[in-house]
Image (cartoon, rainbow, N blue to C red; front, side, top):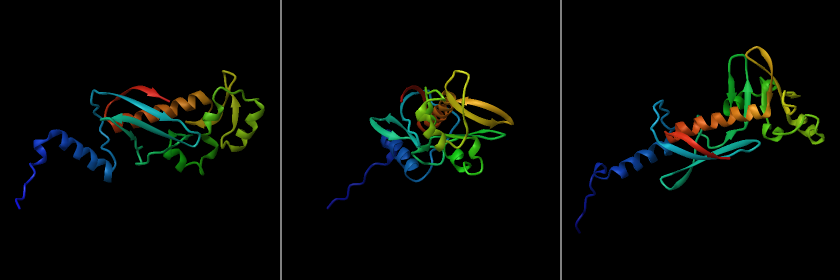
Length: 181
């Protein structure tokens, strides 16, 4: 028999790019570069009460985005400290030591009044105290950068979604132009 030798990968530039893409995803975290390629990306977010997922279509295949700790699921938690705002896994890591300033289940508070009868169950599960915000809707009372603040559920959700967008932009190496939630 005749043994045919395949040409090197450099002959097929698309194969080299695919090989490089697969090898970085299979065994390690993505390369977090600060330089963005000028391509637009459309993502989908599954916003859950406990955790959320981000997906995008790249090269005809739906791919789940990994966060900064290489997990596909990002906890739906936002924490506040004297120095910074923590989102996702970072907030989950400090929830025991800073439970009073950690917001979870914020999806359940969206558009609800603080005196709603079914909100009593949320008070039980919430680690930070619930309060009425300026817009009359339910929110959280937290200490952030040394000041007591009232954060509405909409504000906390916006912080969380912004972080998910940044994670997706780093992963996809492009700018997110459209989002489906």
